[in-house]
Amino acid sequence: MPVFKTPFNGYSVKFSPFYESQLAVATSQNFGILGNGRLHVLQLNPTITEITSFDTADGVYDLCWSESHDSLLIAAVADGSLKIYDLSLPPTSNPIRSLHEHAREAHGVDFNTVRKDSFLSASWDDTVKLWTVDRPTSVRTFKEHAYCVYSAAWNPRHADVFASASGDCTARIWDVREPGSTMILPAHEFEILSCDWNKYDDCIIATASVDKSIKVWDVRNYRVPVAVLNGHGYAVRKVKFSPHRMSVIASCSYDMTVCLWDYMVEDALIGRYDHHTEFAVGVDMSVLVEGLLASTGWDELVYVWQHGMDPRAP
Image (cartoon, rainbow, N blue to C red):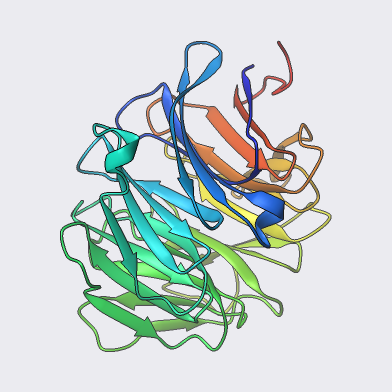
């Protein structure tokens, strides 16, 4: 299965929602502590080749593809900025926009898949911001979390609803039409690093924590989790629901593994991949090709493989 070497440490990987053979990777120099960043746009055919790359003065922590324009990418950068790139323009014309309002590192970005006109940014300044691609300033700032917000994720069915995951040990549900959060989920006793919505049940959300667990919640009755998934040896960095199978979740961890889970069955762990030799911090599942996974990590490698196969197999 194909692998790609990046000059810097991998932070995030995302498949294109438009082209099944295209993906992008966010990277940071020196493990993201100090130094430059680079955004790589890659092509699968069947090896991985680079289409283009964009350099940044600071590390790139996350990225998302536009859901309305196949050539637009948004990067979350360590200087707090969000940079919008257009692949149809030469590198010298990019980024086409740099949005700088966050007072600390921008750690997560997510594009609205329902209305397809807006995106969220999550920052270490404890806020989430709502943006549209054509506006130079944010539409709104959501400030309730008491510590870093690591990720924000749009609900896949409701254009105005999103969730946020924070180091304050809570996940919050928001409706952009409401003045404050609509639900506070005290999901873990340690920092929550990631959250994602089920793609088939708009009331189910997963949270991933420093406590090594993933918890699945039903927002209609969140006193106890629907499932608790234990199996990672260290903090769980990212969690992602499958776009194809309702109860399947992918995760990656500081234990260097990528895991696949089915939270509806008793033996929930259905796959463990230990191909990375450093922290595994980015994972994604293709919307267009069922079972196709991608991961990246601090070992400066990007892997793309089919579930059930060995990511390192030639």
